[in-house]
Image (tube, rainbow, N blue to C red):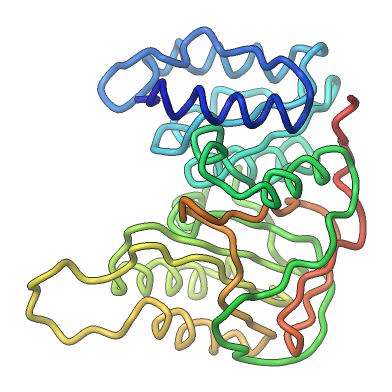
Length: 291
């Protein structure tokens, strides 16, 4: 379900920032269980938008769940013929991964329309600069831990931890050998974060990863009143990622928090300077906003 008031605020912020008029998918306010329509309706609308040469970018209205059910229906060839930026996060991680792996195009892990209405201007500006093929400048970790120092370069894959885990074994799972990986999460208890990271590591999905930056672990804690001794989500991430023996920095400002979400390019070359807690963009998104 898309909250209409929050969507209107986010859409207004997006149109001010980009100085364009956004068009809406026909099913955006449709409600069917926890989806915006059945799979056929949603798949048809998404496929049409991906193939439309008049569309410069697809920006997710919100996250939630459902894109993994549609990926097998999508043909990457129309998107290759009519390249456009895919922007979103959370559940949209699945489409970002599919865009990079199947269509060979870059994308943007960034705020959804609902989130844009609550974010500071600097985050909106960063999204616009990335979308226009510009360099928004280095992104610095605001707090957290430098687990292992060093400077590494690679193509960036940014996404939601649980969504990335769910892609293992599918044709949309990105090849992360040589990549720098950026992860964030919402509402998962520490043991479930442990489970997801353990699967990514033991499955070989993280084999060859050059570095990791960790964003917000928003509301990732045990429920109130639960009598269990548990590490924090941050402690779990540090312990699990230490096994990779690559530069790791936590505390970057991207993810599900309502007041902070820095957009990141998916598929572009970046440099992670773990000693300085900084991420540098080395090349723009290859499908810049044309306006």
